[in-house]
Image (cartoon, rainbow, N blue to C red):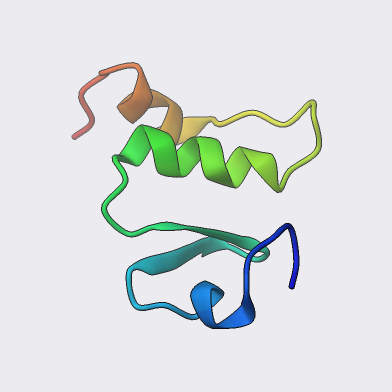
Length: 61
């Protein structure tokens, strides 16, 4: 058991892995999933490109 979560829960069908070591509910909004990914990255990491544009509401072609 890691962080109080049983291994079976980590394999549940309502969870997805947006990146290695991170599990989130599949129903989360895009912004929440991006925040979850940032948890697995160094503190100085940031989003850029299409992810940043989406979060700031900038239209993409």
